[in-house]
Length: 96
Ligand SMILES: [Zn+2]
Image 1: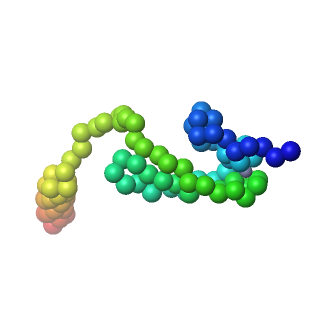
Image 2: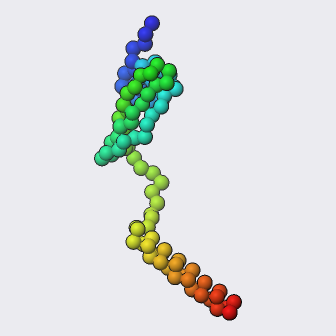
């Protein structure tokens, strides 16, 4: 007897962890192709060979950390280089 494919609701209830055709967990999903808070991922079942597309959308974010802009990073990089050069110069001087 052939199973009916999972409904959208059954599929999302199972958190997209099984093949919607045969319910196998031996499925593979490609990286999400993201566009404007939504994305798609090609999926394939290794058990029955079915393939489908998952639709994803962002629901929240977490672990926000303040970072540095590339301009700020360049400033840090320059100061580090200047410091390294200064150390190198003083090291050379102490050797001489
Ligand atoms: Zn399958």
